Length: 114
Image 1 (cartoon, rainbow, N blue to C red):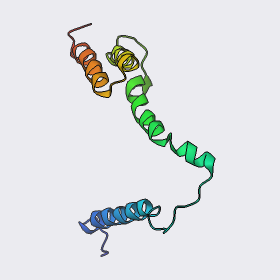
Image 2: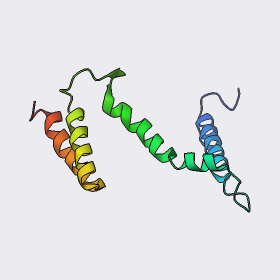
Image 3: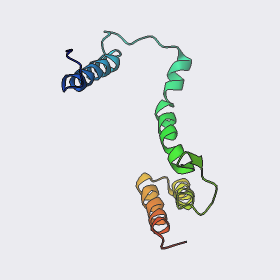
């Protein structure tokens, strides 16, 4: 009988191993005494990494349903995104953008609109 036979030890070892890997990979950039030399093109590119990650998470939620592209404009997400985007370009406020998007989305989603 081995220690990893499906008991509590296997999940515990997996969690501890993943925690160690996470700490090591995140601490890698904080360990050196001085800043790591990076080329200018890489520094400029890394400025856009958070925006790219956010887009990669949000775009499929807006444009797809059940693994397929949305094929109708009657989906409540489309008018909500359009109105929220218009508000953002008009006022440049994040909180207002969220409020406008939800005010448009919720009634359409639960059936009050279409």
